[in-house]
Length: 201
Image (cartoon, rainbow, N blue to C red; front, side, top):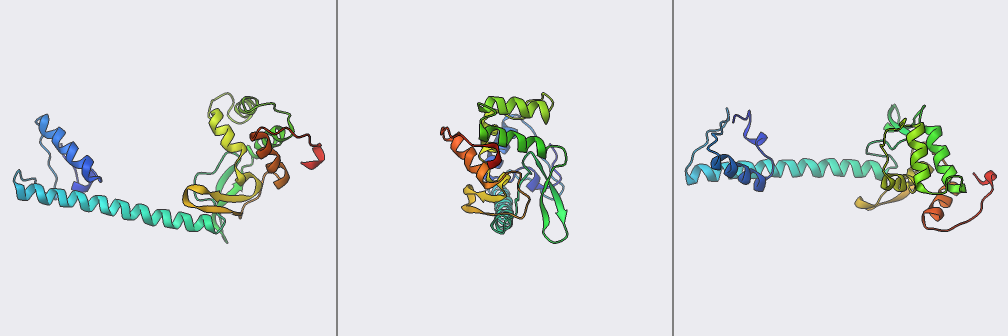
């Protein structure tokens, strides 16, 4: 088995050692143009150090990426894949920012508003509506994904990401629904039944 660089073998020390043992158990020979494998205590020690260095670099790169993405979120910019109804576009002032999707936005707005006012009685109805209108029958939205979409503050123009402790703030993107509709959605998801007139939307 030939690897162009030792770091390409694995960038996790524990997995690297396990993979090497599996190769040895099967009698496979591992070669690398920039490293000579030696079956000696010293050679194995150096090999382990290089594997650990690769893991360190991977984690450092990951930390830098997370820091940059978190900074974007804190400034009101979405830093991940655009949710359905939006797409990522390049803005000369803001850089990469969420843009309203020309084909899907109206459908998503109708789905959110429809659930908020009770037009769609449950999340299954929303799922079927999205599959018919946006995905043409392809099941890209599980019920869990539909629930997350219905409670996503992005659609009301906000940015929030709890896993990184980024609290809710106004985003630099166009909302698809009003804050009133968003509160209606939250109440519906919480099981509260409230009657609203269409003018509230």
